[in-house]
Length: 325
Image (cartoon, rainbow, N blue to C red):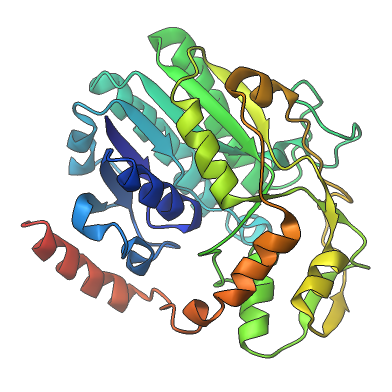
């Protein structure tokens, strides 16, 4: 099977790429390296085709959709506070790019796309656990742009008969969690602070709970989604919320409390009955085991490069030479 992964050099994407390569899939990766790292693909780089390009702009990257069986559209920007400061940037990355991807699918007759949507569309959810039928409550530009991307895909699916599987991800963690940026996800932020021997910054009192799912469990689900026959929207989480204070305890680090940010829920809790029924998938990795795996591999983050424009240019030259460009 021929598969294309957008954002394949990022946290989630690179884990998926490694799994696909292991299963003997033919893999094409498109990534602009704005948050991804070439080093994330070290395990698979000799067995994939990497295209460094910006999906929010028209370009020659579209030709790589030819003869592709399924697209995993993972590329996008994912922080809350920066999206408030620069909504246009998020619109381009999460909406324009998604429109371009589905149009490329239409042009080259790609039959199926799996999209990483966001549970942030539920905002301050009133129903816990939250199901796919519960109220949409957009709180910030990031959530808006991810939801808009989902709606574009669903409408295109209806008109152009392209199967779309939209996965509303809750809180994903695991190896290669992004540690750059001031407002990253909990695990990436905590890992960066752990490496720097700084106290962990806990928003509010730390009693808020998040539905953490290990990236390996998510990758298994991605593969199962390739067999779903109809377009649909699905919540994806562990369905076992854990407090931030518990994560701090597993890290065994000092902490400091910072003010709560607007638009952040007290609890995220996915009702995953729908996806379990359709795919027979079930999360397996316990939060304690998954967190300790991160801490056991913490050395890798000490040497992870920060991708400045100069380093991205250097990476481009390397990969174009490697691919015979």
